[in-house]
Length: 313
Ligand code: SER
Image (cartoon, rainbow, N blue to C red; front, side):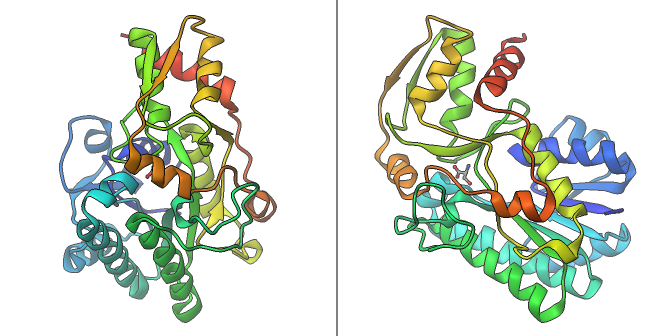
């Protein structure tokens, strides 16, 4: 990676990944793009351009003018928002991906695609979910993620494009809020714990999902994109996860720092159904073997760091 273009730069991952990549590759070599300009480091600490990923002409012009060799395509709509507007989710996630791949193809750009635990469904084995297994998701978001994995694999097979991707679990971070996901409760809970000492969860007791702290996700993207291609058997969709917990598990971890923390429940049927259709815990051995995936944060280490960060005025 030398000249990198990132879409969806104002999103939960984008805000931090742009800064992470600028530190490694130099500020001028990471072009942040989004449909809106937001004041802050993404638009102010290096090149920024307006971009709708579905606009192929604009994408091509940007790739040429910045001599981009790597595309990190993050722009997309998450699971819960997707269920509220499936047509918008399909248009943004699929037409955006197709347009970006088509622009990357003649220019031979390396290409990163963020898949998700949502690419699995109710028929998938829930415990230690294998790398290669049943994928019949029941959300439009999951449908776009499976189709995206397959499309990226196809561009590699057919055109030799260097496509790579990760199945992200729920990501926990403090720089930018997640928008419209099912795993978002695991971010909100820290803000509420620090501010009020209590949280009402929309996800029920006993619903386990895979999760990861953002610094480990950033490291995973950079590592995967720099990995020796001859070692990659699973290109576009590596299972990755650093921990699996339910609301009681994260509450117990928070109580080690805030002993009086109180957790109550008001379950949202839409997001609960989504959570129920996803795995409880992923098998990440392919990512470890093929490119050295090595997350550093477990639940308690993440809790200590998150509570310290979100408590700062
Ligand atoms: N965090 C995402 C969501 O909840 C999963 O990819 O939609």
